[in-house]
Image (cartoon, rainbow, N blue to C red):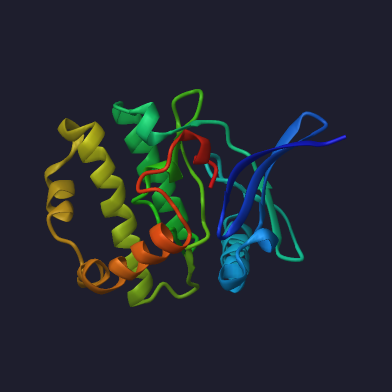
Length: 215
């Protein structure tokens, strides 16, 4: 008989780890979302399912197991979130860069890599990325996709600047110093609304802790 453990419950539903026959999976269930947020919760779950379906199976990234009646089931990745693991090795960030490039080559911009809980440090020290509910899928990789992909890279480099500043190359420092027009628009117009919705309406804390690493 399967057992489950709730990782997160908020206005967008419930996320649990389900253990069945010794195999752990992550289940995102938007059916328990607040009434006012139920539509967006279902849309975000569907977006994550589409992104994981497009990714297939890549080491360090979750893969889709099932998406049925709005409930998403994906593979579980064991690991510690970046802000508690404090990764400081060059290898970690070199592998993290390869993961981001792998996403982009498959036409996926993660669009939420600024959040440290979306970065894991697996038991063997390698990086992993979770939470694709804000991902953009683009077959043609047009201007918007390229701008968001650039921001994915900048967010990774911001983390590298925090944990391994000596490892930044001159080119990486230049990229950090030049946010795109899209990033400037986000900070000026979109981010205040985003923070209002997530902090005030959904009750998300400013910086999520280890229990929420599988979001």
